[in-house]
Amino acid sequence: MTGPRRSPALLGCLALVLGCTSNRAKDPRVLDAIPLRPEIAVTEAPYQRVVVDFKETLDLPYVYVEHQGSYDDMRDSVKRLIAALEAQEIEPQGPLFGLYYDDPKSLPQASHVARIGVPVELGTRAQAPLFGDRTGSRTVVYAVAAGEFGSGRRVLSALYQRMKDWGWVQSGPVMEIYGFPAPGGPGEPEPRFLTEVQIPWQPTR
Image (cartoon, rainbow, N blue to C red; front, top):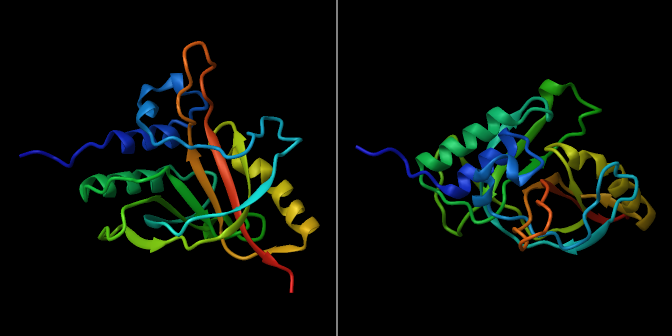
């Protein structure tokens, strides 16, 4: 009797977040993770000059597990997601992401709510503990940060300031998309762990 199919892409996602690696060479499993392809310049530490832009995003089907508790440690939720995807033989169609519904500064950590998920093929059926939903097409302001898992929060203040400057207000949860860029050619430096941070917006009325 064989167990669930071990997806290289899922193992890559697991290595990305659970290992909190910032360098691809530290864990060869991340070579199999679906790459994150930045559309703007990457913001580097110490994150003083954040490159910000806006774009329209696609309406994507996805499956997820719910997370409640501190946003500083998502490891148990990622483990639950990966285990459920493998058990149900669901293959991700894009990078791992999180949807964050609360401001960590305004609520007790135990009350924070998030979704950890991956895009999937249209029509994918999920069973508990997985849930299915669609992202909806969103207009977002966004930036891409290089660094350890959790570095995306270092660019949030710049995104909110830009929204204020442009007369926009937030219209949905913050999305963080995690991954490495596609491998470069020989002689190029090792890619770093990236987080694309998106905030959906609408004009101030």
